[in-house]
Image (cartoon, rainbow, N blue to C red; front, side):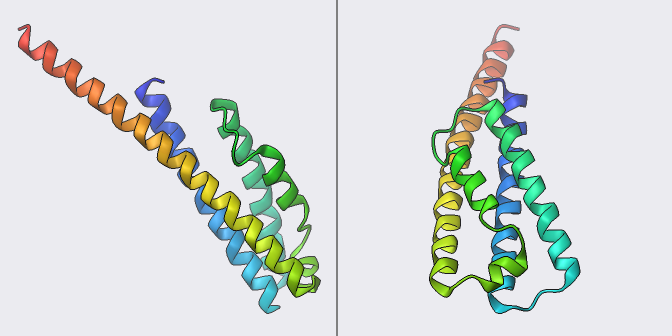
Length: 135
């Protein structure tokens, strides 16, 4: 994978993980039942961004875990903060556990991409060194 492409992909996955962390913030907000109507709007917007970013990332890489279906199921399973706040405690915990499983999976994907990024940087460095020696 070309250096620019991998750099862009690392940035996209980092942004995706940032959105994923925000999702956890909203899950916790709903569990505490301390959210406002504007929080609901932001929550819906965040879900939209997550799904769009997921599609951008998956178009660039083949990631088996976490799967598109896992992410879509989690997002579809929480249509609103109000709905989430009214879920039974056990269901909220299961949702939180699923969120964490997906989060860890995306951290692993990011780690793999960063390894590729370092390999590309090393190749570029070695190529530059070889180029300097030929002068």
